[in-house]
Image (cartoon, rainbow, N blue to C red; front, top):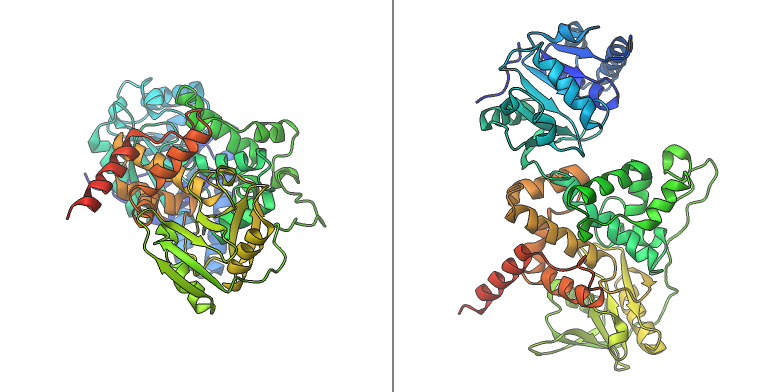
Length: 504
């Protein structure tokens, strides 16, 4: 089935920020749009606000004056639900309560035709549960836009248990016709993005709770080493701590309190204290006028080693060898079947984070994963209390010689970027294996929905098929709660990769 014809009216119920955004998207695409809100006068106010945004688009030369005037003429606020009769699509963006949404759609069924596509913009409720209250649940879908809807390209098109593929396809093609990038998704807690993104926040909070590093340092490492656009603490301050925690709690409850999605106690305390982020003036950071932003912990300058001995390939960190040579430091390579380390002149070892802690070994410094070691501007190191001062200094000096800032964090297994990426990869493989979405749609959703530098499946291929599984296995041994236990899907992927590598 093709997209809705541009002559077909589209209705938006709920005229808050998201409702206005969806209406603007449909309007600019060329549809007649009707706005409805239960609050008297709210739809007309929303129409005025949308008109003002259209004016700004003209000022920015993204619309012509003629296109703006035509769009305004197609926008119609209505005072009664009956005014939505004849619409081909009704998109809802009202309060996130199941009973409220069910009541609305039951009322809409008495107004619109049986062929009208009904869509919810819910981000946390079950599409199946909302649609289950309808006489014709087959024409009910989730159309999950991301805020701000006119700017962000991703739309998750969610099929409930009873959704007819014909209507899901119509919704998908309509979103594409509106200039969006749709991804198809089964009805699962959190859909694609909010399901797979949970570890990005959870692991940062866990490192902080274990006194591994402060928020500013963790954020800097995620940005400057991991390649993420924002760190977890600054991002949740932007989203709103209450909103972010609510999504995490909803996903956790919907998965019957699966330990992989357990909410953070420290975030709960932040919300209880009223420190909700930018909107309240304080969150993890102080956003009040004149407040100073804390700096990440950065190590003092240290002398680089004269040489290093590379045992093995260093796996995902193999490009470091070229960088070390370019810095004028001699690299002596030794073939080791199980070697994945750099040996420093003092005898200490520098090892890529693997889910274990430095305290388990003698004179070892771990370094964190980076998206691209050449482009990374910061690298994190960790070591045990009894690691020699010489080994720590040589490790710091080595990365500083490569032009990197160095942050020394606590002896946290899996460090920061490595544990975060491994868990995201695991949830992505698990989602694909359970039919939530295709690999391509998962990668697209995570890149466009939360601005990840790589899709998690692409990241998995780049790091090697066994990397994430091995790291999580080690983490699970350190913390056997089940939180870090690799999924069956990740185990299968790792074993299949091993077999391919062993095939002559």
